[in-house]
Length: 93
Image 1 (cartoon, rainbow, N blue to C red):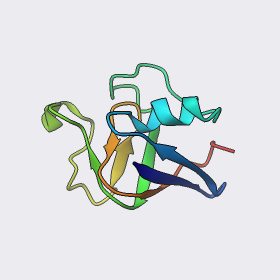
Image 2 (cartoon, rainbow, N blue to C red; image 1 turned 30 degrees about the vertical axis):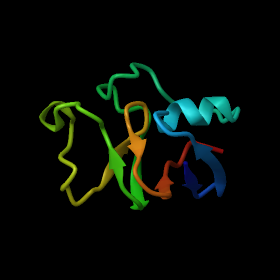
Image 3 (cartoon, rainbow, N blue to C red; image 1 turned 60 degrees about the horizontal axis):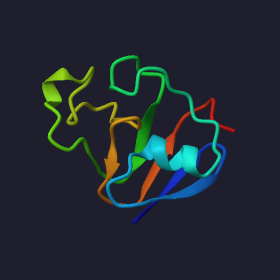
Image 4 (cartoon, helix red, strand yellow; image 1 turned 120 degrees about the vertical axis):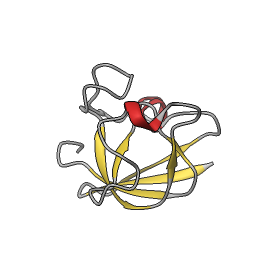
């Protein structure tokens, strides 16, 4: 289980094993932006401040950014946290 903190709102919630960040946010009643649930539309993308994410067996070449990108984006609709994470999304309140 991992704890996610969203900045700047300070919202915190836990993510169960085999649950995406978006699924956990919904389970916790958090109004989290999303559209496609496939890592394509980027509505759910957060800037990673701390922590690590896995995309399972998804081919990283299909994502809009490389995990090594200096922007450090996390696709929350398809991302499984490997550690506690701090993410930034200006529209989550």
